[in-house]
Image (cartoon, rainbow, N blue to C red; front, side, top):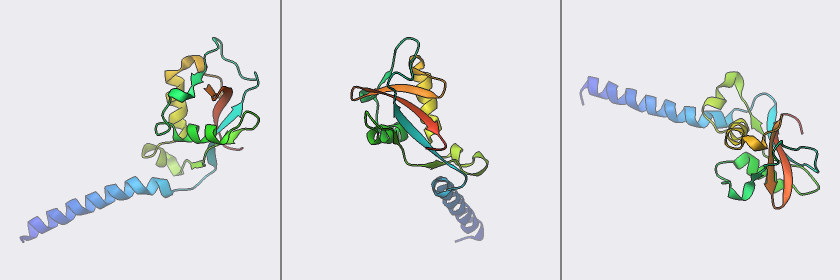
Length: 137
């Protein structure tokens, strides 16, 4: 094998390994304070102007894993929370991973009638929940 071909091949392999590491590394970064998606039963505390809430039975658990986990952990009498999400340093992690902030923004854009100041109102199993991203629980 000629040296130019070998060096080019080694360079391509190094770039592929670097890209794979960048894809895996953000999930391992756990710095800063954790953020949680929290689903709190509303009891009429949170209301939306036109009374529209998101029907969660029509949403995909794969698209909204943090929100789905919080709703699965919640009950009509107690709040539920998702697994923690660490933002990471300098916003590096957010560019490469799915976050509860992405879910919140997507729900706010798709269902503007369910938006509150802090999050969205969701109907799950006949109970209304206020779903928001919080740093402390």
